[in-house]
Every structure is written in C-alpha cells, then in structure tokens.
Length: 205
Image (cartoon, rainbow, N blue to C red):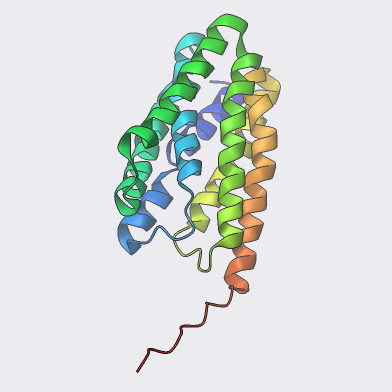
C-alpha cells in the first residue's frame, strides 16, 4: 500500500466516525440545543451519496466508510426527529431526493457534476449549523469534538485527493473545510461569551 492509499484509508476511517461524537453527546446529555437538523440531513446525504459514488468508481476508501457515516448520521437525525417531534416523511424524504439527484448527475455527467450537487446541500448544512451556533442562547448540544474531527477529516481528504487526482473529493473538501473551521471558531467564541438569557417575567399575583 502506497502513502497516498494509506492517507485515503485514514481519511476514510475518520469519515466513518464523524457522526459518533454528536450522536453520543445527544444520547448522554439528552440535549439537542444548538444542533441543526438541516446539517444532519445533509450529513446523511453525504454518507449515502458518497457511498453510491464509491460503488460507481470502485474506490473502497470512499465506499465502506461512507456507508458507516450514512448509518451513524441516520442515528443522529433519528434522535433529532424524536426530540423535536419532526414529521418523519419530510425529514427523511429530503435527503432521499438529493441523493437521487447526486447519483443521477454522477451517472450522466461524471464526478464534477456529482461534486457540485453534493456540495450545495453540504454547504447549506454547514452554514445552517454556523447560524445555529451564533443564534442559540446555549449551544450546549453541539459537540466540539465532532466539529474538530470534521475539520481534520476535510484536511485528510485534501491530502489524499490532491496526489490521487480525485476531482470530486477536491471540489468538496476545500470549501467544506473552510465552513467547518468557521463553525469551530464560532462555537469556541460562544462558549467563552454566552448570550444573556431572556429575563423571566415575574408571576402575576
């Protein structure tokens, strides 16, 4: 196994575990405060769509870890769905439609078209998470470990994709890395400077 392949497997294993810290945090704290539902819908899209891309290209580093990411992202989304009483059909149908579009683009026009379709919902998801962190009174439900792991994962995929000339991965990991880094900075800032809680009106006598 060459160095590039080894980096690819490290990035792949990192991808497979991305959803675990957030899923564990919700399960332990029972808090979904500051956690964006849209972000986890797009994480599920990423897991399933990249699994399909791995099947089409025959690249094991993309296929198997993203299958695990799809499963664990579905676990997180399921917890959010129960905690927030979200409508199941709408919650799960949106990722299914986007995956179908991305896979169709991959088959019809190749990896660059696939990357473009996958990147748009992923970018929306990360921007939504960034806004949630900035606006939430207490972003206690957001896992810093998960965000840092995601940032590291984007860097690892870049180190793999550049020498391997995996265009689809390069088109996604660079801008996604910037967006995840912004969320890391925002969460650290919010933890050091929390928003004031709204005053509670005195009870009527």
